Amino acid sequence: MSGSGRFVDGYLLYLLARASSVASAEFHQQVRAQGVSIAVWRVLASLKGTDQGLTVGELARSCLANQPAISKTVDKLVEQGLLERHADTDDRRRVWVRLTPAGEQRVDSLIARAMDHQTRLLDALGPENADILKAALTQLIDRAP
Amino acid sequence: MSGSGRFVDGYLLYLLARASSVASAEFHQQVRAQGVSIAVWRVLASLKGTDQGLTVGELARSCLANQPAISKTVDKLVEQGLLERHADTDDRRRVWVRLTPAGEQRVDSLIARAMDHQTRLLDALGPENADILKAALTQLIDRAP
DNA sequence: TGTAAAAATATTCCTTTTCATACAATAACG
DNA sequence: CGTTATTGTATGAAAAGGAATATTTTTACA
Image (cartoon, rainbow over all chains, first blue to last red; front, side):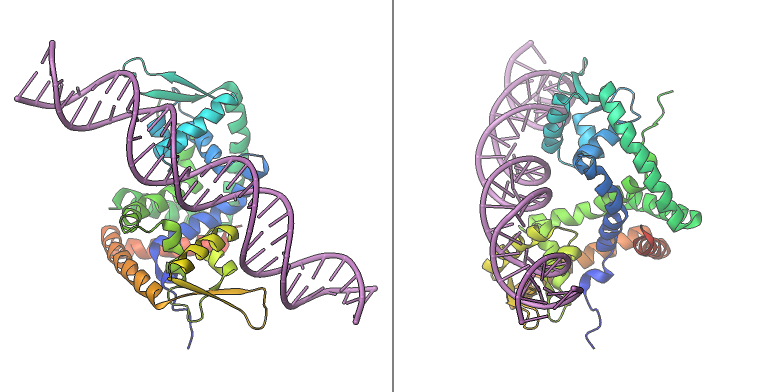
């Protein structure tokens, strides 16, 4: 005996985390090679395609991160001129965050690489497997407790 | 217009990360409520079911973490009496890490909760969807670039 | 309305992670 | 063999992240 009786090998949450990690590894290295952290990439990517931006809270949920972490990351990106904050006129607690033109430019360049990587990933999977995977993940997100 | 033209909504790596995050959220809260960090849970869970333990490097890869982070987490868990280190006799660079009896006891209690949570998750998904998901994730892991 | 509760963000303090590197041991190869 | 390269782990300084809380604004409701 001594066959792999490891607990994690049959554990769904581990399979999920590992799949996400393995699938992202190559692209994440490319991002870091551009001098951009994954946290920053997620903030920029989350804002791309929103026309008024997102509030800090929405951004945190979108980035799968904590609100304080996002506040701090936004601080830095505002200093770098990639983001801008502006208060909501109706509810002055809310703070909107959106890309500046420089931010758009930066994220566009990263997104180009992301799409390129995704194409290769989908190719490796095959179109039908990719569709099955997307459907299964979407169901999981909708139905998870 | 103003329909969701957000980039991330169509991005596979984001779907994966979000699925992993959403599916894990509830259980991870339970773990933290036990006073155990996710990093520690992953170390303990990774070791469960290995009969000689794992080396530090294997443990790092299994935990989807960096080697220095694992070295430090192991330090603390050794201090707490949950893990023990012992050098490899053949290759004295390698350091094996394994659960102590106290560590086994701790991880067993967490695993009981994990299995319970997984049962509910699989129920919510339905058996056939669960199988499809597992197969798709396994393929992704095997075929990712 | 006035007051208590709730919500959104920022801030503080402390832990953890990361990056680079040091150190020790083995492997490769002239 | 001796020397260089490589591998595995640990360590130290710097950055990031997390939990708790403060602050400001809005909502609920007596």
